[in-house]
Amino acid sequence: MSEIKVNSVVNSTGDNDSGLDLSTNDQVIIKTANTTALTIDSSQNATFASKLATTNLGAGAVLQVVSTAKTDTFESSSTSFTDVTGLSVAITPSSSSNKILVFVHFMMAATGSNSVRFNLVRGSTNIAQPTAGSVPSSLHLNTSASQDGRMGSIVFLDSPSTTSATTYKLQALTDGNAFRINARGDSINKTSISTITVMEIAQWLVSQIQYWQLIQMHNFLLMQKM
Image (tube, rainbow, N blue to C red; front, top):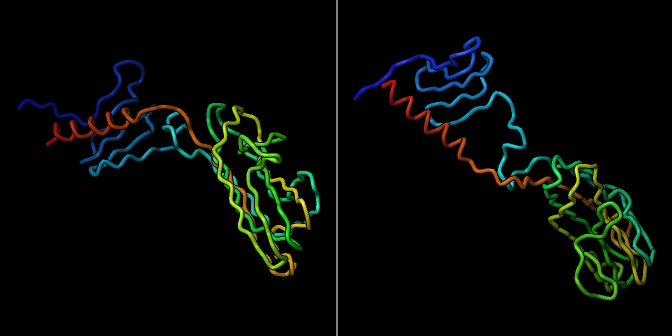
């Protein structure tokens, strides 16, 4: 079998400082401007000199995560939707085509039997809404006594279509007794925490063909050195 044995492959023009470095056994190094950009070892592990640009990540990749934990209590008797103070988070999407995955987890109780509705809000827009109902809401929880506690959870994949800073928050209203967040209805000292977390999810439909081409090239060049 014919073979070509080389220690490096460089560009033929300019200062010849970009190309493949094959001088280390079982390793391929890609250099640009005489600086290592990518190293592939014998186990086909690829190590980048710097983090990948978000435009090189495939759909479904998590690009950033922002979270807020509410550790104090909140109480309201409002019969119209009002902000749950401290349960909000802001994120700035890197692309208008990306989606934001929102998680809200909290504990709710009331000073007596009531019906509490919660809305997930982006800016001033209600999201995660049902298609029907006299008072539509993202989540509806009932209590029958002040000792009752209810765990609330909302998970929603949103399409904000913006690259501007975007705030997500929780709003609530009651149709009866006052309700509390992070505390039982019969004792303000029996407490918990609540969280709201947002993740930016990439929507670029980029395949991994470039990565696998590098792996195949690595294997081919290793065979040439044998």
